[in-house]
Length: 241
Image (cartoon, rainbow, N blue to C red):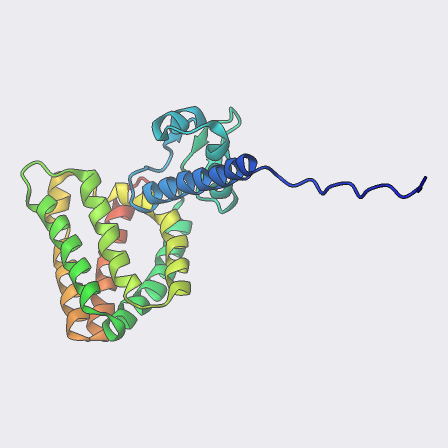
């Protein structure tokens, strides 16, 4: 009798197991995307707490993809875990805010200038759509603050996407993950602030300059928008010393 034994079959994951793993990855990415969007759009305020369970229930997923997404956001300091295991949007001090503002002026100002050179008609259509959505809230007798801050974010990123520079857009997204919640101190300050804060004028100039291909004017409109918001936010006294 031969001493050679038949080779043992290679154990491969079943099709169902593979689908299960793929589904978890997809759900984790979905939760991560949803939380990023809330942070970048300013729909979560500094200091706002949330439980992993509440996030899971709201999004209709299990705890595992929520833990995965939150861990990624904690790693890049967009969220923080408190001693009681609750998750919180980080607070921000004045020095950190000023640092981020300086970087934003340089990076986002450059992006606006580049967008004026690279934009397509589809980019302009998106910019006009979000500019009009923001303007509608600013003119409303009962503006919806969440819609206003989301339209503001979408308008800015319609400009940044027009650069055709994905690496640049990724850098700006990283900045907005940290600065987005602070917009609560500006655009959500009061209905009057939304109407008279100057953002509508800056937006109008920004879109017009990008359309005209005027990079210098686009950069200036963007800088004026960021600086106007930053000055007001500092004046509220809500940033940590």
